[in-house]
Structures are given as structure tokens and as C-alpha cells.
Length: 408
Image (cartoon, rainbow, N blue to C red; front, side, top):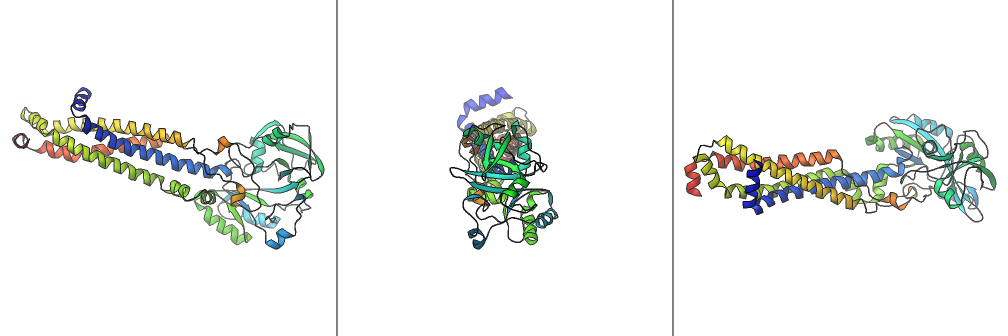
């Protein structure tokens, strides 16, 4: 069969290439568009990925509150108002929230440098910055929840200032001993800081009561219900700002939102267009070979025999087109992997949060092609080719030999 089909390809290369090309184009579009959508989805998850959170909640400050705060030394971030302990407790009762962690971000404006300091409870390590301390430790140790005068430094910050465990750092004019170095993985920015200290120590620095924080990290049971959960949180806590995957997509822009929501549909449309081109080429190919079909039937071939041979040929043409299209689509996805992802910082989505520099390589758009996408593309390519050729082959095989030879 393969040798027979190859001989037909040599005799009618234009028609065969038309079939293969149409299917390949559709498969390439399907693979590339799905890879693009997956890349944007992954980029939208990155700022929260390192802390395993679905939501990062803060409370924006009013103009009056913001103006009353100092601008030198240790202070709360501009535009940030703390949550009270009872509010945190109410947030934990909202339906759909399965785990919560809290933190207190403070800014330290020193005489010669500015640093972001995050007060953390290391015991809350399933979600939030406590997870960074647990999973990202590269040297030293993590402090205890009630340990005074200790800090952990971010790896990049420690490298800039040549810090190592055992060194001392100044926060708000007070000396803290470094006990460890952590690395914030990938492009995740939520929970990132230059220095991490026990939550109780951070509260003392800004003269806040125990239990007062300005960041709530939440993991939900169903990511599709995030908007509903944010509405419930607003009803419980009043005005809040929430960073989620959807809010990050809004910052990225319309292309990202459309790609994540409609990449599969757009890919299927592209695949349909490719199959349509293949259908036109197949129709011409079958028409050109009507005389051949007539001779087959004249020497004793049954209609079923003719259909099986031609459908086998169409199957191989669809297979070749699908494989070529997947290769082209994967190549396009690889090229997209070198494109920069839309830059998203936590301070673009939430007031009062500072951005921490992320390595440039981590901001690339990860447009990888999954095995499921390739399998589906190949299945649609072969199935589309068979469906496109079935009607023409069946009609031609059903004609009488004399009629076919007379018309030919």
C-alpha cells in the first residue's frame, strides 16, 4: 500500500502536496495557538506560583491615611492599611478558602539604601512567604516564629552586598543577625522581599499590635470561583485589593486574555480551515483518478476494495500532514519561547506592594507544547482528512465502470 501511494504521489505531487499542506497548516495553527495560550496562562500564574497562592489580598489606603505616614525610616508601604486580627479570622471563614497565611511588609528608607522587609510567621509554610523560607533555603537556617533579632536574606540581595549567615544587617536602625539565605524561584514576585524577619519583630518595628498585618495569602478550592470569593471577602472586610490570575491577565492586556480563553477555539478554527483546503485538494485528486477507478472496477475490484485503497492513501496523507504540522507548530512555539512575557509586577496589581527585581530569563514566555495537544492535533488531522475524502471516494467508487470510462 505504501509503495502504491508513493507512486501516486510521484505522478500527482501538486495534489498530494495540497492535501498535506492544508492539513499541516491547520495542525500548525492548532499547536501554536494552544502553546501561546498555555504560555500566557503560565505567565499569569508566575507572580503567585512561588507562594502556592490563588489570591494575595491587601487594603488600599485613603489619601488622609497615606499623608499621615512618615517617609523616612521604617514604615508601612505607601497606600497600604493593615488588617486587624478579627478581619483575618473572618477571611478564613469565607466559603472556598482552604488555607490562609499572613505577612507584614514594611519599607526601610535608610541613609544610603532602601530595602523591602517582610515579617513572616515561618510556621505558616503551606502558602505564602513561609513557603519561600521552607522551600527556598540555600544556606543557613530559617528563624523561629518568636526568635528575636534574626533575619533571612534573599539570595540576590545577599550577593549584591556580599552577605552570608552570621553577618549583621541594619533594619530601622536596629541590628539583625542573618541566619539564612533563601532563593525566590522563577519569576514569582508575591512574597518576595530583600529581608525576612519574624512577624512579631516586624510589628514591633512599626509599632503595630500583635495580629496586625497588611498581606493575606489565600489558597482556594476552585480557581474558577476566585471572583465570587473576592466578592465574599469584600462583603466581610470592606474595600480590598486582590491579586489573582485574572487580575494579572488584565494587566498583561487584551492579547493575553483572549489567548488564554480562546486559544483552543481559535486553534480548532485554524484546523478546520486546513481541513477545508485539504478537502478541495482531495476532491481534485479523486476527480483526476476517476479513470483509474474505472479500470479497477472493470477488472473485478469491488467498491469496498476501491474505498479501502483510497482511504488508506488519504490516511497516510493526513498522517504526513499532521506530523509536519505538529513539527511546524512546535517550532513556532519554540520561537515564542524566546519572546519576553508581558512584564507584571505586584505593584501594578496591588497598591502598597513593592516590586522585586526578577532575572530577565525568568520573564520569557513559556510556550511549550504538551503531549495532549500534539496527540489531539494528530487525531484531528487524520480524522479531518478521512472525513474530507470519504464522500468523494464513496461517490466515485459507486459509479459503474462504463460510466466512469466514458466520462473520463
